[in-house]
Amino acid sequence: MNESEQRALAPRHMGAVNWLGLWTLYAKEVRRFLNVYLQTVAAPVVTSLLFLAVFLLALGRAVETVNGISFATFLAPGLVMMTMVQNAFANSSSSITIAKVQGNIVDVLMPPLSAGEMVAGFAFGAVTRGMMVGLVTAVFMSFFVEVGIHNIWAILYFGISASLMLALLGIAGGVWAEKFDHIAVVTNFVVTPLSFLSGTFYSAESLPEAGQVLVHFNPFFYMIDGFRYGFTGISDGTIMTGVVVLAAVNAALWLLCYRMIKTGYKLKA
Image (cartoon, rainbow, N blue to C red):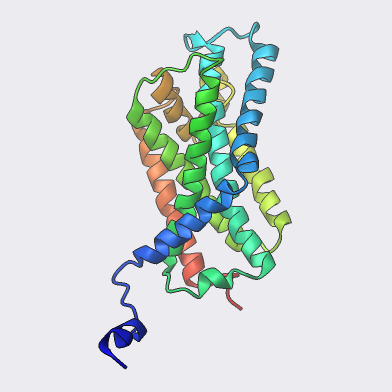
């Protein structure tokens, strides 16, 4: 056996991070949703535009302005954000749940990927879908609603952080779930209520005093409020508080997902 053959058979040293494996998992997650882009990208855009049309037709004349801007301009960023986070959650949760149900989760568990690399691969793949859907939705909405940019950094920070938060929640939900009904439970009793009660369709200032207090305990409020500020320059809360809250929630969810995968919770027999 010559020297080149010996090198080919020698074990590969990955280093501190298996960048090739991480990139492969990320690319797999991205290609997975791009292969069915009509379902994963186009359909959410159409749904958001329908929401926009329904709310403007139903409330457009009754509620002409909110916080000094037109109702349509106020509503658009919230709809974009809701679409982003729902798709980020759907991507990571469905990927893991389908792999568990079909029995091919072993294809992800056997390669030399650490728990942190697995979390990163699934999470960043879901963030990519969320950001892509959000971008396409915002572009199409701009044909019907005046969409300006007040602070690009706020848009990017809150958009990426919110997508990451729901991507991590989707990973935790996917690992916990034993069947698709369990994911539906998380969607129907966690994601959807928090989304609708976060100020997506209304200003928090219009709520009763008790409601204004409660809404500030909802992390979804901060991501939508900060994202809307990036477009309109108007917010119901403190932007720096939102920055800190999203960073803290993401850190906690990342540690939870890391621990679940590290211990093989509901992944390994």
